[in-house]
Length: 422
Image (tube, rainbow, N blue to C red):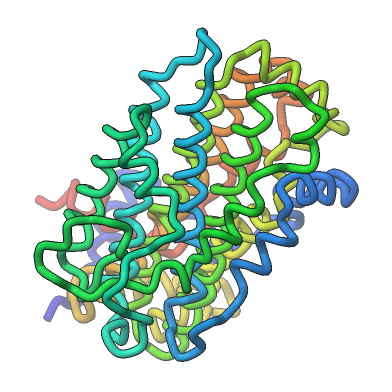
C-alpha cells in the first residue's frame, strides 16, 4: 500500500519552495447558473412546432413495466425510427442544389452511432434476457425495410441492416428490423416497443401545410431526433444517481459514459444544419419567426429538456462525496482531494476511478457541445446572431470553472509530484 499522507507531505515540503500550484476551491458554485430556459412563450412555441407534447407521451408510455431499460431504450429506438424518416425525406428531395452525397455520408454516420448506443444499452442490461419483450417476428411497421428496397435509399438501407447485425452481435437479442441474424437470436418486439406507426403519425409539423420550404421538414425532424435523445439521457442521469446511492459504481460508470456519448451524438445531430441550403434556411427562419429575444437568449435554450439535461450533468458533482465515502469538510479543507489522491494511488476500487473519470468526461462533452453550438449558429445564421454580448450564456458555460474541483486538484498535485520526483 502507498502512504498517501507521506506523498502529500512530500509534495508540500519539496515543491512549496519551487512552484506555486493553484487549486480550485472545492464545490465553489457560482451564485447564478449561466444556463436557463428562454422566455416561456419561446419555449412553448418551440415545443408546439416539434409536437413535443405528443412525442413525450410516446417516450413516457410504459408497455412493459418489468423491463428496466424501457424508459431509456424506447426514446432511443424512436430517435432511430425518426432518423429513418429523415433519410426518406433527404432521398426524396428533388432540389438540384442539395448536397446528396454529403447527406448520405453524414446520415450513415448518424445512424451508425445511434445503433452503437442502442446496442450498448441492450448489452449493459443484465436482466434484459429475462424481462425484455422478445419474439421471433420481425418489425412490419418500421421504415427501414422500405429504405432497404427503394432504389434511392437501397445502398444506405442495406448498410444500416449490416450495421445492426454487427453492433448487436454481443447482445442476447437483435432488433428485428430485417437484419440477417445468422445466429438466430430472438428479436426485440420492435413494433410494440417503438410504435413506429405512432411515431410516423407525427411526421408533419403544424406549419407543413402553409409553409413551402423543403428545409421545414429537415429542421423539424432533426430536432425531434435531438429531443428524443435528450429524454433518454435524462432517464440515464436519474439512473446514475440511483445506482450511486445503491453503491453500484461499476453500473453507474457504464451509464456515465453513455451520457458522454449522447452529448457527442447531439453535437453530430446539430452539425447537420450545415448541410441545409443557406438561403432556404434563412427564409424558413423568417417564415417561422425564429428570432432572438435579446441578450443571453441562445436558440438552444428554448429546449427545456436540454437545459434540464445540462443542470443534471452539473449536479453529478454532488455525488462525488458519496462515491468517495467521505463528507465535504465544512472548513474548506482538502478532505475530498486527499481521498481522491488516495484512490488514484492505491487503485483500491477501479469502478470508482472509472466513474469519476466518466463524470469529468461528461463535463468535457457537455461544454464542447455548447462551444460547438455557438460556432454552428454563426455558420448557419451569421455571426451577428452570436455577437450581441461578449459574455453571453453560451460562452459562460464552456468557460466556467471545473464542476469537479476536488478531482482537478488531486490530478494537479499528483501531476506536479511525479513531474518533480527525483
